[in-house]
Length: 186
Image 1 (cartoon, helix red, strand yellow):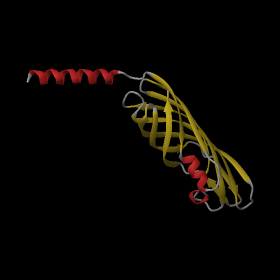
Image 2 (cartoon, rainbow, N blue to C red):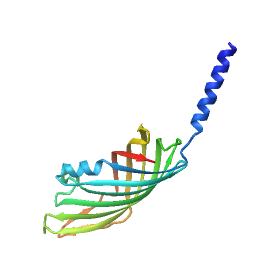
Image 3 (cartoon, one colour):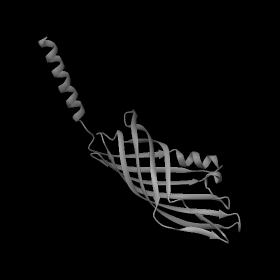
Image 4 (cartoon, rainbow, N blue to C red):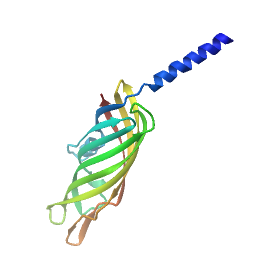
């Protein structure tokens, strides 16, 4: 009986020591699959990339993405070909060490948009300033290569819109998004 107690005690000490080894700081890169997939659905090229810096349980991400929204998802039949280039700065907090598991985050984005009116067949540009909040989960697949399902809610802060004749295109105030990222951190 005393041997079992000693073995259990040593195992818990080893586990405790292993859990205490943490990555204090790191840099990483990731690609989000939603912009290329959404753009491909409308016959166009899309991209997304992010670079990030992590310290303790915090991560700061710089994001850039370009995509074309399928016309059927725009919600306005008077316009077509909505193209967006989004840039973002987001801060995340991880519940666990080593930049894995659940995280929650918030930040700001800028969406530079170009849309074509079916009425005058001209391109019109407008910009959205966006507050965003989200959460996700990082699964380490091999060493520091990870898969990251995530979701976010976006709130449009300004009222920039496009008016052509009697028609108007305005970005919805609240928007949701879910996607999957692939990434690596060093």
